Image (cartoon, rainbow over all chains, first blue to last red):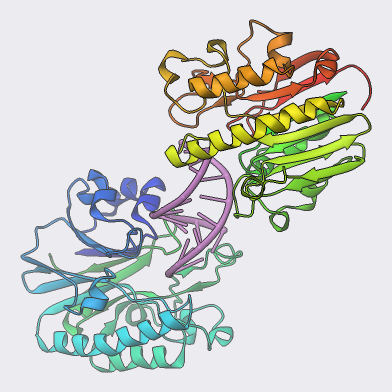
Length: 256
Length: 256
DNA sequence: CTTGCAAAG
DNA sequence: CTTTTCAAG
């Protein structure tokens, strides 16, 4: 079973860069997308339902902003849009698809990088999301939360950790929050598979960040312990650059 | 003496397309620019004063909108920004440079194509500009008014005149206004030199207008009768496309 | 630096 | 369809 997580920084932009030519070659069973920056009427047929996939979306109310989606080869038993928290759900950050005993979630955690106001919203999200994660763990299902978490956990997870201790995405409070989440039992699959591999998934568009590989690992597949044990391997696709984020590809034993 | 008029549709965009590589090769004495879409702080040194030229500007108050400029090899005796009509002058549409007995003016007449409101402003401009033109003729100087007049005068001046009788830029009132202006004694130099040559200077960005040469002659050098008699030849530069308008190049006898 | 927006042409 | 601005990342 192959699951991909990709922040597209605009699904239309990614499409222009060949994302939908690449998709059929991936062999993915489920693809979680973030930052669609498009609403349903803005999307082409190929974006709404690529050949071989069903498409599900949770766009933001604001045009051209945020928005998450899930493509799946199999028809899910249920799809849930949003967390049931109105001020979060208007921003299109959470979508869940259930396949028998497995739930796949596409998450786009708020960025705090554009100012104090947005950082406050990010902290508020974290505060309300942790109880949700705790509760999901109690459900006893297998779950993978794919997405752009906008937090690098440890020094290995970004190139210049010392210079970023005061920057959103590597703040002590954010890192501690992730530590607490993992303490609950959730598993950071990449780090578990590859304890020593940085695994950057995002590079700033400014300066020469990509060329110099000044990256951050902020896209994760965070799973329940049972699903983590089924993780076989993971990779970050960098041959074609669809976005400022690279797709995170993970293979798990078993069928969807 | 060579004088060029060019609507750049963004001086920065035109620069990216090589306008400032082309400029030194033109041998122009004076270059009149329209639609700079930039204010002074947005312009590079090469834009403010290209090698061999002095630069003068009358930008709009609104960022990224309108704005005219003049480059001249010789230092002018005087430069006048605006018409002295505040609601026109805030839009950066008129700049005059005096060289001894000759005045060169860069004009960007309002477009009415974006709606009724702007067409009303265009008509108001025409109404107030005609007395100004009449008055200038009475000054007894030699004058060339270079620029984007946003009016095609006669059927020969645009590809599809029948289909545009109700469209801004070829409205009967606009055409009559130009006729009245020429009746005053002002001379449309291109049409006088080349009675049969369409002389399109603008092609819509929409559709395949440029490829199909669906153009309009809306950029003119309109001169006093004395200067018109010195006109030798004119051409429209289309080898490189800097903008949706092509530069209008005219040679006159004598020195600046 | 980039996406997507809106205004203007 | 394009340039530019603006918000957001």
